[in-house]
Image (cartoon, rainbow, N blue to C red):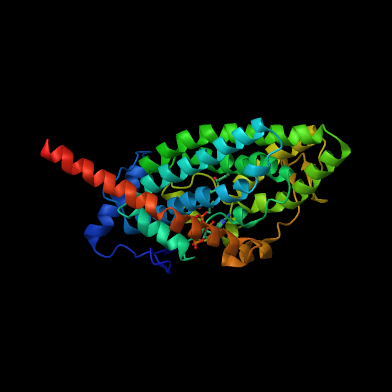
Length: 331
Ligand code: BYC
């Protein structure tokens, strides 16, 4: 079993060494098995803490970087109503990032340090945000497919064994459900529109389908963290199980829209009670998470620029807080 340290290096999770440590780990696992929530001040194995920091910070970074592809369309949304909705959605993503960084800080790591890792290109964020948003249909597709996949993954995380993460997920899931519906509604409007609008929706689905399936992570057979994360009940459902669930829910939605899923091997399998689907292009996934996706460089550059341009705001907020603290103390 491997875990990633804060320095980004992957190393083996250290085995409990002494009898006392083993006993403590057994007591911890018994609490997990009994469905007790672990809270910030409780004892936890170092591997559990590191796994959570890795996953929650990657999740927080995904929310923040996830604002960029949608932000690309704020000035070009087709109507004022669409623009207002899109702005609100992007603000929600920022809020999600903030809850998640806060949840992560309860594990004894500073948000500034996590942001630093992202900007230095050492931290991962979801592969999906390294694809471009070329047309307005892509904004709909992000809501329908990307938020749809995010919800599928996040609903079980509401039952994560770590209290602060599980609680952050409850609110995030409520907002993501609304995001998914607004995306579906955009795609539905296009699918019921002119032939050109229908073509735009189909072309967008053709580009986003496989990357959406990659959001659930590599196949279980290649997933280094799943077994241990399931044992610790950080993850409740495996990558492949969630991917299958997503396909099963989404195919009928595409049929209702009159759109074609770009997978010639897709068919209902009555024996399994699930859709069979073709091979996910995993080579592409590994390339994207190694930094070689279509927009990796652009996304990081944009984040770095935004961070620099926001420096004066952070400094002003800190100065204001300090002034208030001194005033309160003097009073
Ligand atoms: N992209 O052992 P595995 C959203 C990495 S966005 C990049 O299966 P794990 C939203 C993985 O980190 C959705 N990297 O890992 C926001 C690991 O590398 P390291 C964000 C990926 O953690 C705005 C390696 O591959 N959601 O909500 O057990 C607008 C092996 O993987 C990906 C979350 O982050 C990927 N897709 O399982 C709209 C949910 N997949 O760290 C929407 C929380 C895998 O060893 N995270 N990797 O270097 C999770 O549930 C899990 O971390 C994952 C991966 C299922 C993603």
